Image (cartoon, rainbow over all chains, first blue to last red; front, top):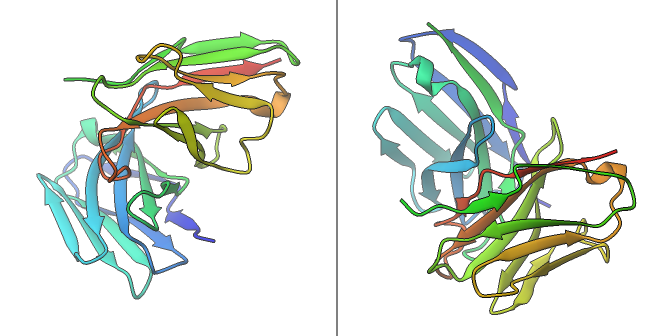
Length: 112
Length: 115
């Protein structure tokens, strides 16, 4: 059974710093991995999706990497801004049409 | 931009009562889902729905739960007799095609509180 774990559970960093959020999964036979952002009172927004054949995806200041063999993914946020404050969720899918299995998330707070 | 709409945003009910959570998926989407998140816990899959029937359901989705697409636009989750442990944020999601987990759009959620 796939388990997704995220460390740390919470993180506070000063504005402008680069940071890394970590995600690990127990079953390396994933089909894809996504990073979501969750804002209070709002839904989940997909930020980046990495297929199992890919090593990384980039969108603006965000870069997500995937290492299937070690069961790890990272989300790198460059030049953090207060607007980046949110909970970031990592989620894995085992097949193309399969449900998404989420981690508990990392609650990020960027200090102005 | 099209979005998934959920109503109400907050629902308070007494234990044992029936509740219906409502969702309006994006209009051209074909696959529909309910997920839930108990406070402090992971977002968990409940059920997926396609072509007017359940495609997959988790062990959480027992006989107390049902889903329906009554009129071609709404997608509802019914809990027949709520329990305290049903208190959670319930998210509806929809997807346009069979690559369902790659193009998943979530609603803002309904916070259900069972007293």
